Amino acid sequence: MAAGEFAEKEKGTVMRKVIISLAPVEAGKAIDQSALVEDVVKSARAGAAMCHLHCRRKDGSLTDDTAELEDTFERIAQETDLIIQASTGGVSEMSIEQRCRPLMCRRVESASLNGGSTNLGEAVYINSLEDIRYCAGAVYDRGIIPEIEVFDIGMIYNIRMTREQVPYREPMLYNLVFGHKGGMQPDMECLTAFCAAVPRDALWGVTHYGRDNWDFLAAAIAMGASVVRIGFEDSRHLAPGKQAEYNYQEVEKLAALIGAMDLEVATPAQARQIMHILPGKRQ
Image (cartoon, rainbow, N blue to C red):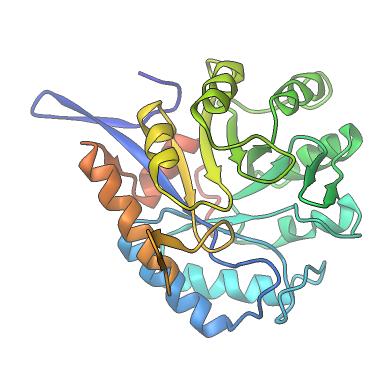
């Protein structure tokens, strides 16, 4: 069985679980907190196990003021059992110390840890080795499980280098990000190369930014992805010529796709086991 894969025997059949991670907020768009929470709650009912959010103002811009984010996390946690994942990323002028402030929110169980610098379209996304070490230390100091976001294969080796200074917990979880201009593209050659570079004892998931089809996500699931990210942060595409109005519609479709592949959608409790989230972290 693949590292970290949660399975249960039912009438002699081993059922593989796939975690649906929801990233519901499109960058730069104004945020209606009540509508966002309602959509996230419906997404949880549809099969999402984790919710990934950046620290943003109501106008959608990134900030290091965590008050709004913490309130959103609290409201989500009161109505769902979702794993709360904070982002430490996003292109901005903030320092790594400022970007890591969401880790102080008490509901956070997982957080993104960016594996290096890359071009995101016309923007340059800076994550130095010093930034990686700082973020990793801040994550582990809080008992939080990192999801390591990698935009090209070299970032996997950045993490290997920083492991000499930071004691990463096993199994490590890599989120392979495809689709950004300047990064790895969503084709089978890149996916195969990326997967080959992921350590064999690690978990991996996939994000398809700018997604205009569902083929690539299906291929990643077939190749063993433990986590699949969906939501408006990456794409609103629901079907050819059709955009989703709500995030939960994308979650419903992904859950149906996983079921059609004779796999099972992981519940939040099962996802915590797969990701080895520390017992009692959820408060």
